[in-house]
Image (cartoon, rainbow, N blue to C red):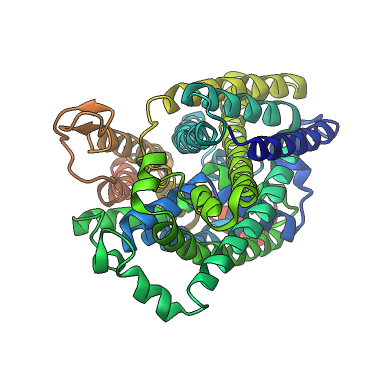
Length: 511
């Protein structure tokens, strides 16, 4: 057990619990619970979005992926960053103008139908849980490495903490935990990057030259094809990464925490700059881990490479930097899982319970109680699923969540805003086809089935050969929405569509 690391862990936990305590005093209504009463400024929400987005996949997973597979690992950095252009130009302002608490609100602004709201809420819960599994896997590996605790107990610790943040502090606590975490993560990553760059005499050319002989891959380290042998798999991954962010529920609900659409757009610009700088620095994390930690040590600590960044910190800066980076990684996981729990709980309490079961008649007190119980339920389910995914790289797990988000949510969001003929049947069909196809393809993929014992969850030959389903499931989501609309006898309400376009672009009459 690393004593200093354990102490910094306690400091991080104490700080976040203090934030939660003060936030709980300001969380009395559903608006405060779901959206922090839309009180965040552009730069605050930008930092919080960055905090939400720079997850365990980004910090732990990408560093390990680059260290072990070279160029292929950097696909994740590129995809995660470019995705924000889609969010900025297509989703941010219309979502803020049309919605209130959840993504389903945006769809329901055009299609006031319980089935549409219910399916949108189902998508939100499924994607949030998928994404959360990755964070909990990262947390389990990190705490096991540092404190010597069994993986199961490590996951339980994080699960309990994330539930406390959401149940008592709501969006206010979640946002400020993310802001603090984003600052700490940028500082820690910058320190490591500077030290790594100094080791290569601040020369990009020297760094790339020396990496040709620094790993067992040799010169192939700098070339694509080390992990993704099939070009279709590479395209599928990048499609999921670039398009998936615009469908991620825990990112989308962040646009409701600001007062208006211009502030939402401003917060995305802030987030894009912060995230862009971070993903550039993942090159130094991955190269540094490969050169100064070594392939064997990275794999020994975690076969998927998830502990590469903390091990690099230890190699460069000894116990203190190791403890600091590990504590930051822990804060990273806590912040992101809190946001995920909140998005799933909001979908259940606001969409299922309040609008479908209670038909809009639930009181503030009843909605708050439902949201808190939903938070507990989502946490328990995510913890149970995370126990089966211990050996998977967290960046890879998140890419699967992106594929589900891009397949299930993005087609309906885009058509709701831009297609006049789009109707209720098309919305439901698009969301269900995208969700089911993505989940089924993931289940039959090499991630779940492998002929080699221990390489996947089940032993057997995968029926679907691609690791990421995006190249199939994303087009299917769009096709489902189009076909559902065209074959349906229901006509689109053109007047309602015109109102939606005005609201989406100006915010006039925002629901």
